Amino acid sequence: MPLIDQMKMIIDEYEAKANQLEFNAKMIDIYEGNLLHYLKKELAANLDKKAYEALEDRIVPINILRRMIDKMSKIYQKGVVRRVSDGSDADSQLLTEYETDMRMNDRMNRVNEYYNMFKYGLARPVAFEGRKMLNAVANDRYFVISTDPIDPMRVTHLVYIDRVEETKEGKKRIVFHAWTDTEFLIFDDDMEVRTSEMQDLGNVEGINPFGVIDAEYFNRSTNYLMPKPDFDLYAIVILIPVLMTDLAYAIKFQSFSITYGIDIDFENMKRAPNALWLFKTDKKIGTDAKPTVGTIKPDVDIGEVISYIQSTLSIFLQTRGIRPGAVGQLTAENFSSGISKMIDEMDTFEDRNSQISTFGPGDAALTNRIVKKLHPVWSSQRHVENNHKFSANASVNTDFPEQIPMQDRGQIVKDQQAEVGAGFTTRKRAIKKLNPGMSEDEIKILMAEIDAEKAERSPDFTNDGNNENNSDEE
Image (cartoon, rainbow, N blue to C red; front, side, top):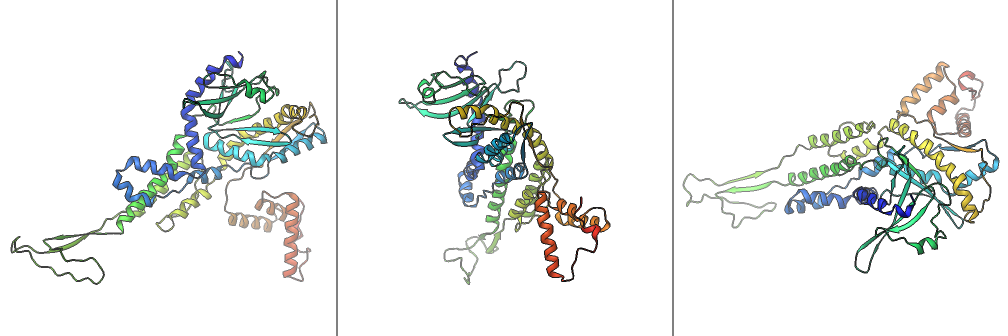
């Protein structure tokens, strides 16, 4: 069925997903640093006006969302290798050109961040007048559809929400850009085709020149084409600073006691240092009456509240397959730094391996799409200068480095030192174990620097001793 006949279906899908897109926009807003706005709304909705006014200046906007997502999104930060198989040097040069110009690892890292925040992400390569870009499309600006009766997890329609317009009557008009493997269409939610805009792009016929959808979709779910909103993540992102704000509010009132008096004339009494209060019995009340002054001091078990917050965050992380870092006993003094340390030192090993199972083939599919499908069209349209045609039998593979569980470096040093001393491994292998991100050349340079430093400290130092342990051989 032509796209022009599917406009109503697409608009219906948008309306069905409107709440999810709105939720995604909220999460992105928090991720970009606007947590305080949502904390204020949450607290104002759950407290009476006077209580909210009393704690408004004590709100604790600690944003754990960004710290968590940054910690989980590490697979592109070093060692990703894309290589051409069964191709020519020119094929490899073309691949390198796109990797460099599009800053692929940097932009794919942002796609990975959206993927970890929403359980799906989209990478869209674009080239125009010599510029090459790889866009990590924000999750509130697109949605996908499948009309495949055999495989409902295959994307058949990609729809971008291009913009929201306001009509003369003050109504909102949403403009969509819809893509399938064969067609392209610009229209609005009033089912009006924007022919002039398509003409401006030189594509009034609505033909997809690439023969494929121009983006790669990454999906964590095996059951839903668009995974359900992660309300659990949102809840914990709000709950932790709310609990911390509650604690700050309690501490505020615990710092001040309430003074009360019984059968006392307070007419001339002042609350000030060195003030002298003289009391006398009010005879009108009776001879047995005695003037009394006392205080009420609020008492909050700060340690118990802090322990609860710590255990809540720890259990949540474990439900995500993440081992939280060990921070010891949190106190009021080290609480903020302790929570930060818990996130900084959490072990995401299992989750990173799970991500690679999606991003490994997905990244390769994206890169092959760029060099085989998109590049020839961009070249013919003179948007890129390189006119090389990628070899028909060649393909691009993406390899991620081995993911290593978080380990205590001091313990690794001791273990490797013992193995080298016992002759079970070589110095070179031990250094590589300690520095898994280093290349062979970097390891050789480091070993040379270590030897040079030893020589400076010990004039009689030679490489003759312990040849077995100091061998650079594999």
